[in-house]
Length: 292
Image (cartoon, rainbow, N blue to C red; front, side, top):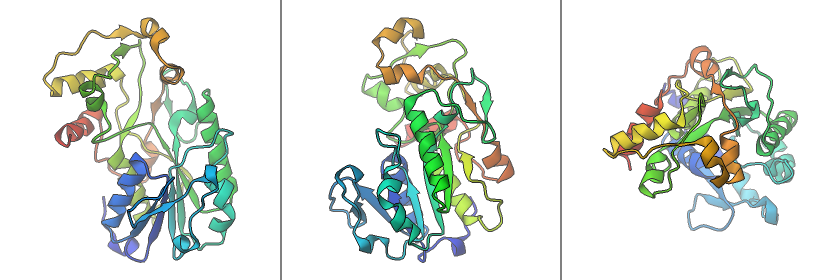
C-alpha cells in the first residue's frame, strides 16, 4: 500500500457509521494515518471517539459531531423496508457538509446466483434474497442522492477473531458439502487497505462508483474448513451433504447455500492497481491463526 501521507492526515475527519467488525478495523487503521475517526454506536459509550446514532429511536448525532467532517464510511445495513437508515435521517445534513467522499459497504449478494460463474461490476445485479434486494435498493438510493459516494461490494468477511477457527473452537462448526459450490471471501484488512489505497490515489485513478473487494481464490467452504483443521492439527469430522443437512439449517443459513458465484476483483487489482495483502484464504487464515 502506497503511503501518500500528504493525501491522508490530520486535516481529514472521518465518521464511521455502523462500527461493527469492518468499521472498527477501518477506524483503528485510519487513525494511524493521523486522521480523526469518530465511530457511531446505537447507545452511549465511554469511548470519547464514539457518538450515538440510532435511526430506529430517532437518536441522531449531536451537531458538533459533523464539524469539519470530510469523509464518511457507512457500514449500516438496510432497515426492514429496504431503506437506508443514514439517508432516511441524515441526507439533508450530509448535503449541507463539504464532504470529499462517502463510502458505502454493500454486498456481492446483489449479483444473485450465477451457478458458479464469475461476476464483475459490469454485470447486471440480480438479487434473489430479500436482504440483497434491500442492499441494491440502498445502493440506488446512495447513487441518486447526489452525494460523492463510492460503493464497495463485499463477499464473506473474515479476520482475526471472526473466522472458521472460532466456530471450530466453540464447537459451532457445520461441516457441509455441496457439489461444485464455491464462495468468495475477503480479509477485513483488505477492505480497509483497498479503501485507503483508493483515497490516497484518487487524484490519479479513474473514478469508479462501484468496486468489488474480494480475494483471488473463490473456493468451497469445505476447503477452508479442512485447512483450519490442518492448522489446528485436528482431524476434521466427516462432512454432511447439504441435502441431508438442509432441514436442520435456519432459513438464513439455507439461503447462504442457495447462491453460487465467483466474484472478480480485476477492476480493483488490475485496473486500479491495488495489491491484496491476503490474496487467498490460506494466507488470510494463517494470519487469523497467528493472531487468535
